[in-house]
Image 1 (cartoon, rainbow, N blue to C red):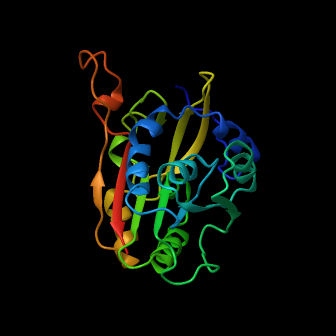
Image 2 (cartoon, helix red, strand yellow):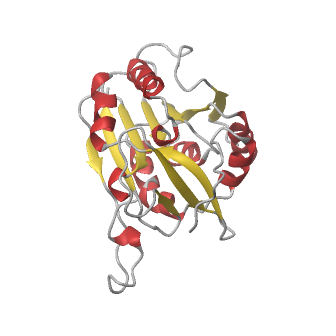
Length: 245
């Protein structure tokens, strides 16, 4: 994979079109099982939030696996347009929001929240802190919050479908990180994410009033020798933080 010198902004229509065609195999294998376990942990007719839903893949998992009613939120009208077109569902409502406030939802009115590959795309720590506090406010006591994101210990590693960061580069909290995503036709899109340490993620949660999260680093089982196995059998591309209100 090679870095494009003109990375796409996440809120652009070009990024939405490219993201629609991303190769989702690793996310499906490593993140979606945790989403499905969450979806099956509470009975049907409960309200879940998919925050930063993008093109709707996670919202669809929640609706199909657990019978949830899902509010799927994103600050990109282009992403939401694709989600409504590609993943319509009678229990999913797609909604544009500002990335910070959930003011239409009452305190303790939500039964679960999921936020996948979102914190890494936002350069504004203050906005993320405000969003995290809002998620805590709207969740009922004991309701789960699942936050999945890029593994900060895996920068520079060339996985089958992505690479975030240059090999051997060292990043600090808030630094921009060139990120490549493989598309289904074998080409790549380049955008920019933000590096944040595990401790920074933990502080977003605890400062908002969540308990310190459990952290999972899922990998794929190796098939063959280590030298021939893809990087995702040795290093986790993603991390999954789970906590509760």
